[in-house]
Amino acid sequence: MDTTTLKTTQSLTPKLVNAVGFSPDSRVWVYTANRPLNDAEAQAAQQALDGFVRQWTAHNAALKAMAEVFQNQFVLLMVDEAQAGASGCSIDKSVHFLEALGAQLAVDLFERMRFAWVQDGHLQFANRTEFSVAVQNSAIQADTLVVNTLVSTKRDLEKNWLVPFSESWHKRLV
Image (cartoon, rainbow, N blue to C red; front, side, top):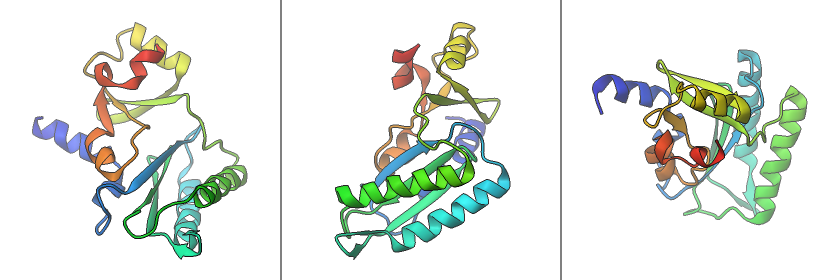
């Protein structure tokens, strides 16, 4: 990878990859907003997320967790299960929290058919139809980096957040 590409991918990678003291096997969940948050909304969401992860528990045990609003379009949650595992109930708590946060901000944080790819050093977003058109029009090619929202660990986030379209799950949908 050349220096320019490396710098671009680093700036387009969530800061959670650099979280000190978290196991590479820490669990990660990625949520995509159906629209960009404005800066005030993103800041309010980050503050709410920070408050949530500070009090997030599983079976009355504090979870070592972090959250990040990334590029005003993604919400990422990370739990280091080496300390305490996220239970079904604690995961439900996070889902309910994100539903309430989305309602407060009038945004759907569970948009699974919104895709992102790198173009000219920036993330571009589109719904499934728009994404398919971009592929058909060759705006997205085999080597175009796309965001892999299916990453599930900190290690995966670091190594597979941006992957070539030809190696991504996205190609099955177009």
